[in-house]
Image (cartoon, rainbow, N blue to C red; front, side):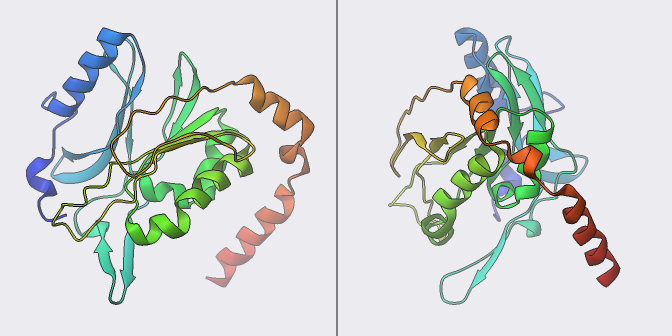
Length: 235
């Protein structure tokens, strides 16, 4: 985290070699790219930012990580992303050739409310570029992906860096990028090593799942709203 400011890139100002590389690839292959995340420098602040690049090579959307990760496990790991980054303030939903995509970054996946909002805004797929560590990865990685997909009856995709076992960093990456279907089924997955993984998304499956199991109709929004009001008064 201490070195990230020196690697930060000015996306809005056009001084981002990472975005330039992704734009060249997207335009050359005529594809949409959800481009991981990079440290972004803007107005004197640093953000953890993911750009979505369209087939024309232009930025279609930019997501700044909303939930900043912090962990303190004695004898294992202490880490506070807020020491370096500023949290984003906007949800990101983007229309692409393959459907509507919601974007979250890493710790954003821990918050079901965000995924629910993306579903309510018509997302078919939520992409979460992520870098879980060995502790949280072993406990939560599979669970979080499947929970977000199953709860909202949509597809969830995660993309993690590969694990570098020779790294001197205290933050060792879990890996295991995956594509999860609306029933929690693993459609494609990598291990912890560098790999290219291909999975197919059938958007008609979302409609079928929601028709057979209409969770949105069965939801008790009246009760959930009451709980939120009671919590607000209690605080």
